[in-house]
Image 1: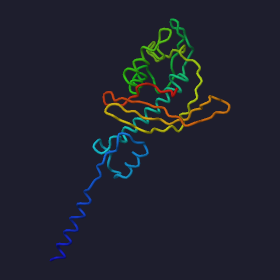
Image 2 (image 1 turned 180 degrees about the vertical axis):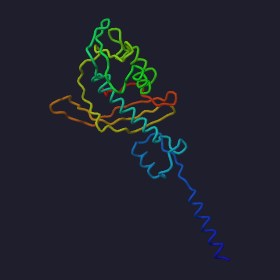
Image 3 (image 1 turned 90 degrees about the vertical axis):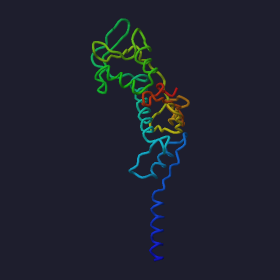
Image 4 (image 1 turned 90 degrees about the horizontal axis):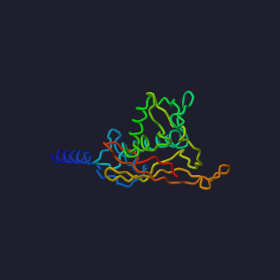
Length: 221
């Protein structure tokens, strides 16, 4: 009889241990590596939740997307270059314009949706409407198609290398999230003998209508 009671006690103890969970939250300031290491230790079938993780993988995925598309905007849409065009350029009022030929944006509406999903309302309004030159913004709708204001493209010296950029030091407070992006910077600006040094670009995202968006485009300059 004593052996039976002892067995029951052991079984109950094991069941109790199996139900113990570590609910300690990740702090508001954490590196991506710390978050990923913490999540890796959890069951593969469980997704991080707000109750167990203030900085979760959903937020990290979104920030990675925002940084990736910020790089696209810097390098090939707004800053260093503009999107490819089709046909000859034309003069519209005093601006030189051309029709965009970029598979990602078949129409101006496609482009507007992309910009409004990527940037805060205030900054999207600036890029789409109020930041104009010779009477037109950098991208606009003309004859039902997406056009670009070629007059806004200039040449700039640029010394930031975004390759292998990494997000770190995420600090989320409510609907605001500040984080660092580690890149390389040619500090001396020497094209022939570049001196690439670690460089931190501080970024900020805000949550609008349940979606995280960058407060602006970050060039690193």
